[in-house]
Length: 229
Image (tube, rainbow, N blue to C red):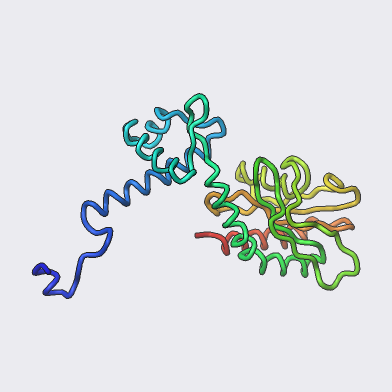
């Protein structure tokens, strides 16, 4: 034990010192690379990744080797970097946690609006209902199954997500786009890194856009708070 440790009762911890700093930097770069690849629909070349990260190609190759070993990144036939199947495995493991975190806000929303509330996330370019809560006091309501998929440009949930991509938090209302006679209002969940989602309700009767819109906005904000790191 050195003099400082003896005097102050401290000992070195894993990650302290130059080598620990290098490890943290490598981890940070690997995670940044993963995000860059995720945000590039057409993939990235090693040169593009190096320029975006501000590091050399050799360093990118080392990062790619480590990420590929865990299935997080792969190289396609043209040598471009794309997400690997390992990301899907992590996403599936994370989905129950997302649903659990959103349930309290969805329950409140369903009871307030008297309509079926749902959390919809983006998966494979489509909207997927990840969590659904039906109101307890209504005699009739829409049966909306968890796992239901739909295009993002149809229905309030998907349209709200598209609005969120452009920075709009405004609620979106639709009528009969996914199911004849069904009305929906949804708002995007913003401010959660790596998550594209919306919170909304669907009902068999027209919904008051002002009242329900405020309720949906409040629920989306509550979900964002619950899921934020």
